Image (cartoon, rainbow, N blue to C red; front, side, top):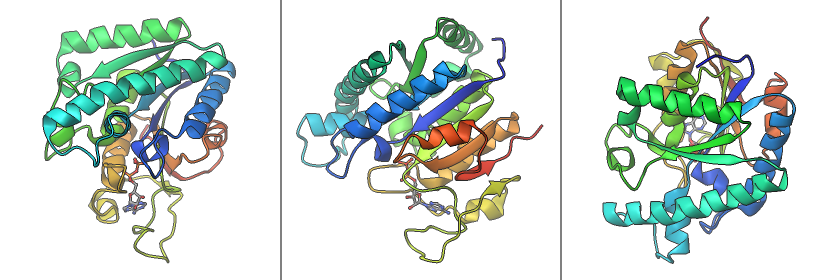
Length: 265
Ligand code: ADP
C-alpha cells in the first residue's frame, strides 16, 4: 500500500459511544461523523476504529446487565454492530460520505496472505474516498473478548495494528479521560496530565494501573500497548478525550492536546 502523508486512524471506545445508561450516545456519534467528514474534506484520509458493539447490542436486547457468557456477548456484538453501522452510515451520509465495514480478527493480520488482502481492501476503500470503519469480529473470535492477554481489548491494540497496516501518519485514541496522567485521575485528585512521552518503558506502564472505566474495558494499559506498537513504526499517537469530537480538529492541526506519544523515526 502506498503511504500517504496525511492518513489518520481514529479510535473511539465504548465509553465515548454510549451514555451512562448504556444507550448509544447519538450526539457524540453524530458530531464524530461531522468532524471526521470535515477532516476528510480538508484532504486527510480517515480510518475509524470503533468498538461498542457488545454494550449497544446488550442494551438493545434489553439484557439486564453486561453479558458475561461468551455466547451472549457474541450475540450482543452481532446486534450492536448492526446498530452502530446503521447509525454511522446515516450520520456520515448527512455529509455525503461513504463508509465501509471491516471486521478483523488477530489471526487475519498474522497470516501474510490475509494481511495483504486486508491492506489491498483498505487501499481500495481509501482510494474511493470511503471511510473504513473497523471493529473486532466479536461474533466469530472469542480470544479478543475474553483472553487474558486481551490482545485487542476494546480495540486499542487493534487500532495500532490497523495504523501500522495502513502506514498511517497519526493514530488518535479517544478516551473518556483527557490523556495519560502520572497516576489514575479517578483515584488521585492530584494526578497530572503528561503532555508528551518519548519512551514507553516499564516506569510508564507502572503509571497506567489496571482496566479502566465501567463501560470501557481497555483502560490506559491497552492504550500504552497501542502507542508502543504504533510509535515503534514511527506513527505519532495521541490519547485525548472524545467527549467533544471537535478536539480532533486541534489534533490534526498539530496543537498540543491530551498526551502525545512521539513516533520513533
Ligand atoms: P475508553 O473506553 O475510552 O477506551 P477506558 O475506560 O478503557 O476508556 O480507559 C480510560 C480509563 O483509564 C480512565 O477513565 C482512568 O480511570 C483509567 N486510568 C488508569 N490509569 C490512568 C492514567 N495514568 N492516566 C489516565 N487514565 C488512567
